[in-house]
Length: 352
Length: 71
Image (tube, rainbow over all chains, first blue to last red; front, side):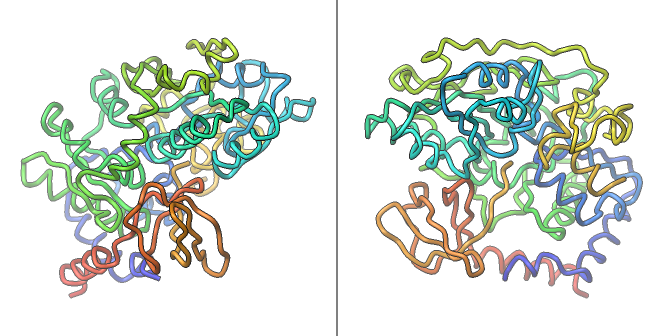
């Protein structure tokens, strides 16, 4: 399998040696939970020299889903609620979907939004529409199928998030220090590398799109160093076997047909302008927000959890007082511990 | 959450296909990759093939790596 070629320890060692020649401080933020997991799994943080810091940004759509979203789902007592597995243990203001299910709520895990549509052929079903650009086209396609086949039992509660506006937000925030981005591989498979051209043009910031094998990530870091040393900011693409400059146009078209940009609440970060997608009026009968008159306003319950600072890269998970103490994957308090790809869960598994 | 796994296309029927995931076969939607052909490697995410993996681009990256680092 080709991927094995991207795990060659000999080559990794040689790239690491070259990376180690760079002596300046360098803070690289990854904004993809799968990168966070790969960095932990392959112990890359420990292998890199201490002047090169990898910090984990808001790379997991589950972790940034607001409390009120879970509350809204739990309020739908008489329906079948279909979700991706990651969402089950995300705390709402009072409880989780997992606990609500134990108390009788009909919550079902699905692998694909298409599975939710099948269930909707028999009973009133809502699908939790969580995801970045990787996941959203499939959900948009499912909404269009529901329209074409007149499956009126189906609706989606949208909490779609977009990565480029989040990058902009992080760069504009006073308290976030980032020298360059390790850009997400599978989000970029959809949106393409051109979608990041605003980073060098408007923010004098560089980024490299990376795959998920250890050599991919190390090579991307080396490419970031080369860009910084050249003195000219740029976006480069290490993951060319999957990511093209313009991305997947079919997937983009379906998203544009069904959804439109709107301000969105990011747990821990607040409201980011035009960083989410809502369902267009012509598909409104599949919009659970309208169908069931749900309010998903921004609300952060008071908590000593420091996920907000972790999402901005201000602290690392072990610096949170709850980490691996009262907060663990079995009993998550903060959202970053919930999903297996959350920063805290990745640190809990690999870096304790 | 954006986890995607590679699989090889073994059957195509309009915008639906079957992929081989190392011995397990699974149905996937091919709606985002109409240009797909039998034998292509694709990336699968939540029941959808989101892109074709370019073998030639992968080999090119490996060759580049070896040319620069395998000295």
